[in-house]
Structure formats: C-alpha cells, structure tokens
Amino acid sequence: MKEILDWAEQMGCAATVCDKDCKILYMNERSRQTFARHGDIIGHDLMQYHPKHAQEKIAHMLATGDTNAYTIRKNGINKLIFQTPWRKDGEIAGLVELSIPLPEDMPHYDRDQPSR
Picture 1 (cartoon, rainbow, N blue to C red):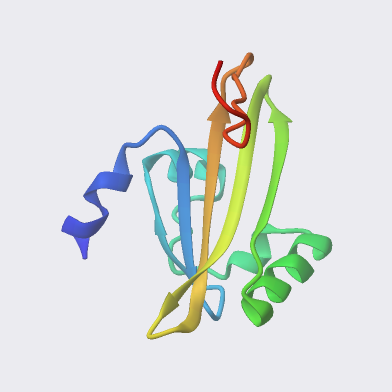
Picture 2 (tube, rainbow, N blue to C red):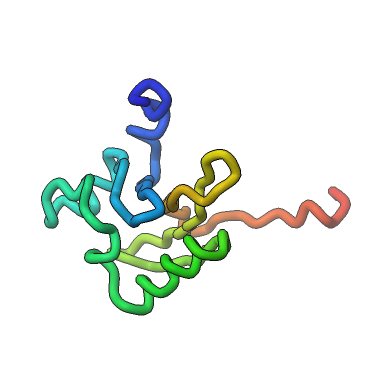
C-alpha cells in the first residue's frame, strides 16, 4: 500500500483517509503537520477531533455517499475542503478529505461558454 500512496505523501494539500468506522487509516505529511498538536492520530477515531455538527455531516456522508465541499479561510489562507466517500467493491468503505490551499486571486473559467 505504501507504494500506492507515495504520490500523496508530499503533495501540496492535506489528505486524510478513514474507514467506515471513522478509524483514521492514512494522513499525508501535510495532514500530519496540521494535526501535530494531537500527536500521532492514525488509528484514532476521526469523530473525536470534530464538533457535533461535523460529526453529523460525517455520519451522513458515510450513510448516503454524499460529498461535502466548502471553502474556508484559516491562518490567512483560503482553502477548499473536499470530503467524499471512497468505495471498495461498490460499497462505502470510508471517507477521504482533501484540504487544498487556494491562490488569493484564483482564476475561474466557464467551460460552458465558447472561448473568445
């Protein structure tokens, strides 16, 4: 499994993966740095690091397969938070969260409109 995840280890965003019981399976380097104040939390219950409203959202995603995406500003950096179930043999097996820093002046392109 390590070889498969090597690509994610040092990418420019935080990646966290849990199983369907909310046990943290993987955190890339950036994710581990983000949560370093808690120590090594791989193997811990993801829910204990989230407030009640977030726990409810996590449970909903695991039950329904829905994706949750939103933006935040934290420590002066805009980020896209993208949380989505991952599947094994078609069944929800857990969640993946990507926390992606966004450039301050990120361009937006409407691909539905013809190019000029």
